[in-house]
Image (cartoon, rainbow, N blue to C red; front, side, top):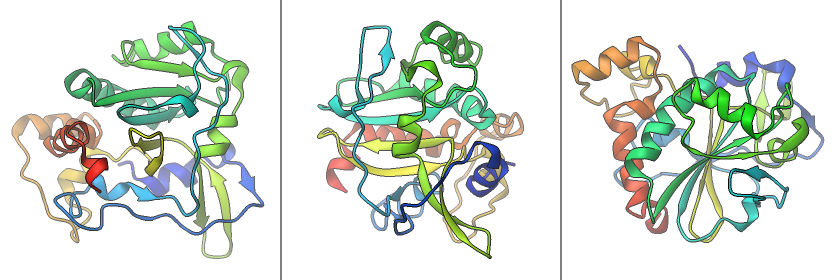
Length: 241
């Protein structure tokens, strides 16, 4: 089973502490049709405003910068080859991209903090093995972690102390004006969804196919709930929130 906290705390070697403190992230969808949706509940308003960095990135279509994102809602997925949940989620996010990507919505994968210092071709090969080789990909070159540090820090506590740490997976919801509206950490497992580990949230009726996917450790993006959420994002959910 994969949840946000176990992913964040279980990859302690990849976390980087910071002296800068910010308030904890707070729920983003506090009302409306997705306020009781398990996947949407994972997206939270950052404790401090996040600005998309102007870090030079490499893509199949030339140099890119996240700071230039405009015109449509984007789900920006930060990942690295050492992050197993990132790779698991990539398969499902690629399916979301193929189904709902268009003039109003897009999915972008950003490789950051690569331990193997993967280049564009290497990153594409990793994603291709997960059935996600066709999704828009930006790469922070030479294993640099500027994007990781700028966007993936959150406040975590182990009971004795609280630190600001950066961790993956981290997904960002970016509106058509280029503003980071919400983010989530971890790859929420469909198994968690099936078992109903969050009784405070409304359950969703699963089809037999969804249950089979859950047993194969797909993420909640592969469930009907994930597709409903993606469809709403494509239909302008962020502009209404």
